[in-house]
Length: 483
Image (tube, rainbow, N blue to C red):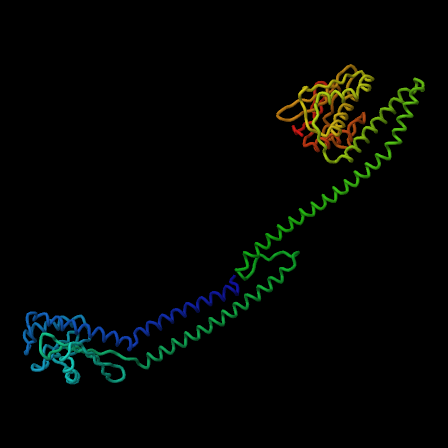
């Protein structure tokens, strides 16, 4: 379907093409106007006359002075015939004061009668001007109008080889007619009309283009509306595609910004929850310590019948107290405070802190590290993480087994592992092992392992579980960061 814009453009191109054709026709007519044609014919006739005179003069090269009487007239006639053979419509001859007119030629004459001399009118025109030409050395061109449409041209050239002798040539050329004037007037009028039409169409096209552009721009003000990808203004088509792509990109960026804002709100909510959890831990810690102290006092005087239950209360209270200590530690020390420690004495201290519990369960806790190994860490946070892993291992390790706490380097990283010979972690439990909500049948995973992972990530590392036969191993994988 051709749009109005395309149709207007085609019409304008058509009119411009016709305008150019009319200009070419006018140029051709002006080129062939009689005034221009006469000027060219006069110049050509003068040149031909001079050439014939020069060819005749060459016949007498040794004469010191011009001849008084024409000689070798046949040869002159031959030179005249040869000169006029390629000049249609041109007649000519020679004249000498004593001999008169001689050596006449009109090769292109196509009349019925043979012409052997010029007519009287032409002879009179030559005789009227021959004295001036014969006395000088420059040719002369004469113009005489015959009727309304013809112009008689006559060229007279002096002969240097003879006294008072000339070569004369004559021809006729048409002049402008009424029909030609009418044609020129019609062409000029047509050109003027076409020029006006082109200007009017151009004005209408430009006005229509701006109007459609403004309407399209107004329709695009509403960003919620779809961008029209088709328009009858071809110049606007690429911009519409770019606008559509830009709006789609803006929506993507807006969605990303909303997600960032949402994550920021979620992080703020988590910070607030952490602060509330810290306050709750502080509130619970003091009563819990009282419960733990009173239960210890009661276990010293209670009968053996209730000793097992009191021990269980003490263990659970210690577990809760340990968890609260870790929560408070993470909340109070969100930024890592690194210090360089020697791993062997640091691990020995951790193993010794669990000696009472390990002896009660008849499980050995062994620390192993190279005496030269050191690492830059937050010792309080990372100790809490290792303590959690040791407590988990003691909860599952069978009597008479060993819990191994080991640190060693591998591939430029420091691996701190805690392994036991217990039943290990079931495949179903491994997927949620580090989830704060996860619980085992002995209630020892959950929050503790979740905080171990948080501490490992804060140090730029990670924590993972490996299955052993028997038992299992937790590994804290840390980069070798030095202070």
